[in-house]
Length: 194
Image 1: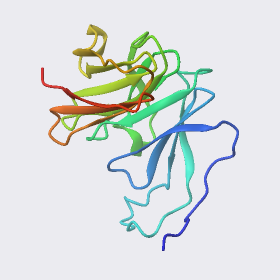
Image 2: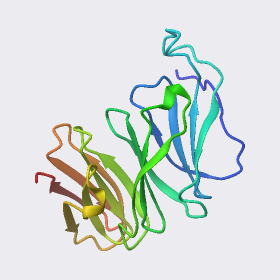
Image 3: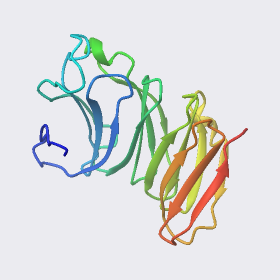
């Protein structure tokens, strides 16, 4: 049987999205309805060699406010853990450098894609090579972006044929395909190959 280990948060703003960091011990980002992104960590447990079944006190160690006032429905770390990508209801995407996280340095924004979608961004998934990411939106599209040149526009835009919002997108382990699902009950598979 599973056990609840901790309850975190004050309930001040509803959490809408969540992403676990791939390497930092029990560290996660939370996208909130008020537009903030809070990053929580159990502290220096990994550096101290503490195993997964033991944890320290969780604390909010960073708050990102670029989306202020606009709900953040999508957050994802790159598989190498160096970047956090977020999308919100105004269709904007922000990319933050999280490589200095354990040094307790400021997490800085490294890119912004304004009006990336014409509707809410509902999901972000990063391809395994950490070089591209995929977004899905209430505007019924799925887009593939190059992390190195995000403002050059999407690498691919799929006019999905979905009749309603595209709620989620996921990427295959080899990075060649992505899959979306929508309110219309359909799932679609896409090629992410350039």
